[in-house]
Length: 186
Figure (tube, rainbow, N blue to C red):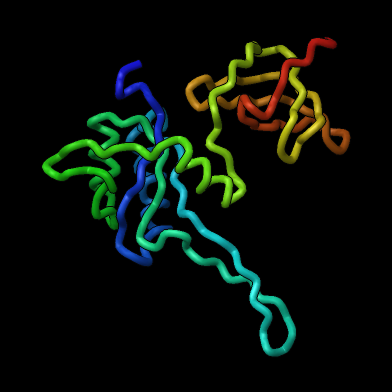
């Protein structure tokens, strides 16, 4: 697998207080410039803390885990690097030595710790072998335990869409490969 084919996590340095704006800008730029196959997830790590106020009511406060930093899952290519690097509010990639050099990605165990603290997963590649029309059992998430018929498969993003029955109606569930298993009963 070449350098440009591997999907990895990187850290962006941003102006403090602009993390969510940078996230939004990158997502918009990736879509408008047709880079959805190179730029996948953009995350601003946050933690929620419950504070008891003087009147006895609980108040949730969201803190940025790493103020001034944004995580991005992407395939590092010259074009993707250029688009992300030149997004307003981005001051650079962490692990880049300047002069246009590509940054070093986070280690898998580093991103796993960060995402687990946020209640997300790193979406480890799954070897599920299903085709459109096959049935799957959803094993995780909001649709856990439901069976659906696969209608669309995105191998690049490791996601699929399946029609499930919910509240007496057919509904489309979009899930990661690692959230389903093949249903051999059909």
